[in-house]
Image (cartoon, rainbow, N blue to C red):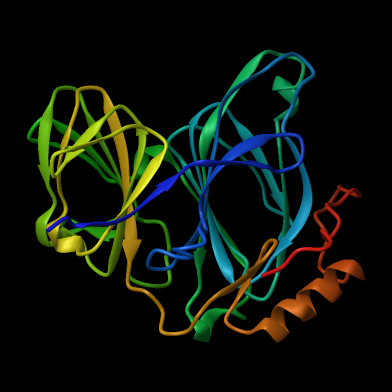
Length: 293
């Protein structure tokens, strides 16, 4: 019996002046464990004067995880954080009761040709922490657990797995793992995973149960403990998941909550510009209309 429950294709989505590939949410699978949203940014080459400019916008009820493969991005938020994220590092921003942030090409690159490639991920918060105070953590690439095993290169970007723990301060049992192959190799994860689990193929090819799967697909597992597959040489995959929440999570635009009334309140607050502002920035992304849950 196949352990693959669902295959999700990457779908194009516009986030303003930048086209991304959307992976989650999907109509048949809204979340995987606490993971509620995944966008694949790029790979894109931006010419001189062509820049990423995502103006200030709000979030509630989630943590965001930004992980770049190439390029650079300047993060600013309503806590006063201003930090550049570069490849291999993790920006972990927890919105809780509300935060506003912008994402832009750094000033020193705005008149240069540059690349941008990475993942933007939302992780829903446990119900008891949905209204926690917002916070921000930047974890340098050098602090992400990395190791080699049986010809494979591993990184535990967030969460706990394989007896290791990432320094990214997550709020529920989860994992976000990078695996790279330099030669054709069989991967057997075994009991390292728990809860719901999925595999995203960034580049290359994997083989599972007589089937071939190429890049830009997510494979949802029926049972995380039966996660076995073969990676072709020069393949990169990301395995993510964890313990799902008992309560349904609703998503509207940038808001995630277990209560629709809370999302309606956040919508009204943003229209009234009642969220805290990002210091030094005056523009903002307006509330989209109409947009259904």
